[in-house]
Image (tube, rainbow, N blue to C red; front, side, top):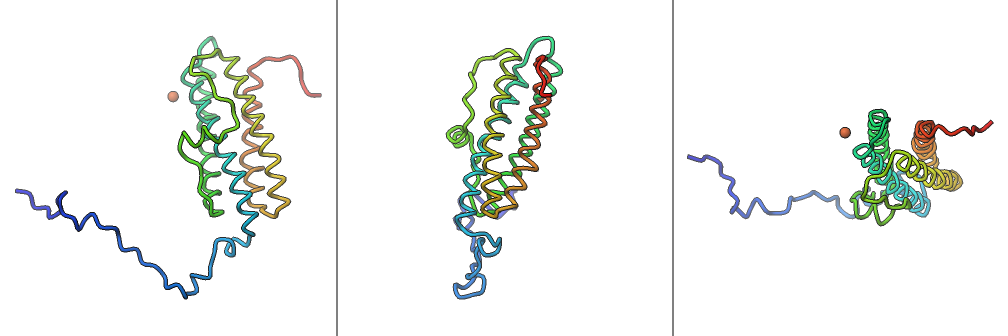
Length: 195
Ligand SMILES: [Fe+2]
């Protein structure tokens, strides 16, 4: 015999939780994220917009790496299969850092695939499978787009006084992309070098 008192038909379990709210005239009511972070609202809004753009592009390149991890073929299969998965994981970790910075600033981070596709600056990949040179070329183009955006946004954040976002963009985003570009570029076996 069942002993639980909770049933699907008991309406009292469907009620909204009673969330305690502070009185309107309390000290809490005078606090805002703007004052606590010591950043002006327009500065935070500009950083949120920039970071959401970088987030959409980070999630896109993460998924490009995963797509190519699955679809790569040829004599470098195993090497690229491993490399693409590593880079996808690193971009996934980076997306978490960017999204949490958006939330810290009081924004709402982009999250779902449809919103990411709408916002991203990176051209959509074909559904079909491509060879490894085409995959690497697409990835290098995507990295270039993000690096151009990130450098401009880092400068804007620093000028506006949001050095926290500037640091995140430089230390986390730009450095990771530059490193991943190096690993990709060396697979193309091109003769030219910057001297
Ligand atoms: Fe895998």
